[in-house]
Length: 338
Ligand SMILES: NC(=O)c1ccc[n+]([C@@H]2O[C@H](COP(=O)([O-])OP(=O)(O)OC[C@H]3O[C@@H](n4cnc5c(N)ncnc54)[C@H](O)[C@@H]3O)[C@@H](O)[C@H]2O)c1
Image (cartoon, rainbow, N blue to C red; front, side):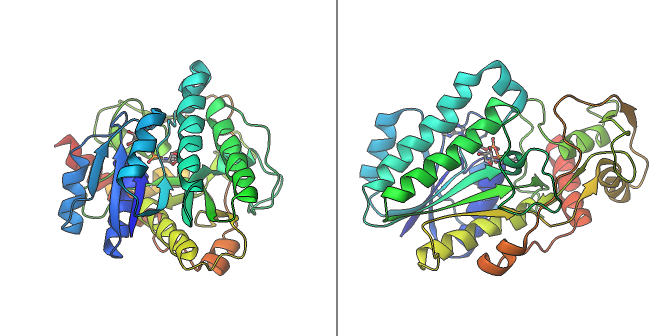
């Protein structure tokens, strides 16, 4: 049996390929390298001792997607990471985001619907909750109006999968709503690639640490939290990758009571921006140069996951601490800058 990982050279995808290979799955990666480098394959091989099969292909090309599934009839499971993910860019170029994040999803689901049995894992996001009314956030918290076209693609994506599953009993799907992924593989062979402007706090911190940025801007210290900075749930990318394997195994073993399910993937613990900086300073061994500036438009105050459903039903729990994850992020940043 083969498992297709779309976007498998990307940040979360590459770590998931490593975890799948460790479990003995044969992995086929599709990536168009729009936000990745083919050298990631070497990093995966160094960790796993094996390169996945690689198809350089743009999933926006429907003909190529159809052709791929003809050439790989043994693909029974798909983990779909490929997407564009820059929130700001999505506001500027909404059609690019709808085409890449929704079009590609539809093409893949069409192909999977033709199979006798297929398993599908979707990269969703805690952005679907917006500023939730209650913490920690459970999966049945209401989905709030999206703040950006990117966020909207995750909401619409979930709806498309849910609607398709209702009429396609042979299709089994899980949407994983990630909280804030961070870190790199402990070997520092793979991590988050430094293409473009980072989208998340941790790469900004490590880039400041390594001297690529003069200082880190902390957006607002007047939020109603203990230290006034925003709170998020930082999940180590290796823990997150393992959640995909567990979710896939659930579907392959037909342990899912419904053919469409949603799970939060976080640690269940919220950390403020200043706590994250504090964690970095422990591995850095000195003070980070940061400055408090005004609030950033669109930032919510607090978001952290209730992970009870993932813990009890998936049998998955995050293991690594924020400090472990930070150590790996710093090791990776230093390696790529050398
Ligand atoms: N990183 C986060 O903070 C975060 C949070 C929540 C959800 N997600 C979602 O998780 C998924 C993976 O995120 P990531 O951080 O690993 O991103 P990433 O950009 O590192 O990985 C995505 C990969 O998909 C590839 N890709 C994009 N469009 C493609 C196309 N049309 N055809 C083939 N390949 C294509 C890119 O080259 C890249 O390697 C995305 O769907 C993202 O929206 C990420």
